[in-house]
Image 1 (cartoon, one colour):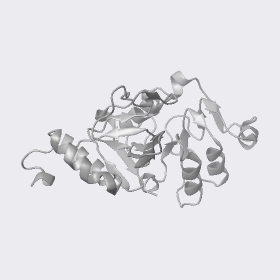
Image 2 (cartoon, helix red, strand yellow; image 1 turned 90 degrees about the horizontal axis):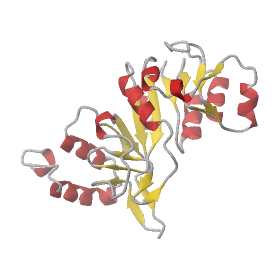
Image 3 (tube, helix red, strand yellow; image 1 turned 120 degrees about the vertical axis):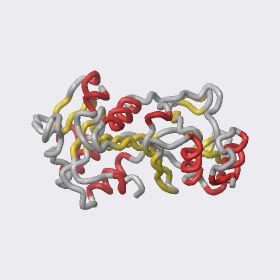
Length: 244
């Protein structure tokens, strides 16, 4: 629901992550119209959106009226939809994932998931400490492309908590990334971050404002500890709102 608030008529969409099918279903049931697709992976959700009349691509500047992609992965429904369908056009990743190509369309909304984010706004999507995760594909490309797109929005979403291998619940919003964690996306190009507790816009904010915003969408059980850690990290100094 928080992600849906950021999608407007005429937006050019990029889906990725565990919520792809759910977001697709919600868009299909919404009043949104004239959406476009530019994504490295075409999925069943894109077919559902097209069948619901949501995808026209009329407002795209690049590959107008086409669903542009590199890889298609889904069920038989997707492959039958693709077969001799002039609405769909496949390009190499060197084109589809080039941030300069992505940014040529206005109102790019790039939605992507992450493993952790720290109070500086650094995003880790490839590991949890020394535990490696699957490759991030075009995450950095699309967030940068959306950042450069006129009216574009790059959105990183993640659940506020997860359970580790010992069954212990932990926060995905952390004071600083764990040793060996990979910075997949630097804080300088992170625009929006969403959890089930809300969505915040980080672009243009100072370090303490980013920390403040991220703590506000962390799980309530971890917010006091995150505030305490932010103080130790000197993210809040005299005159900041939380320290007054």
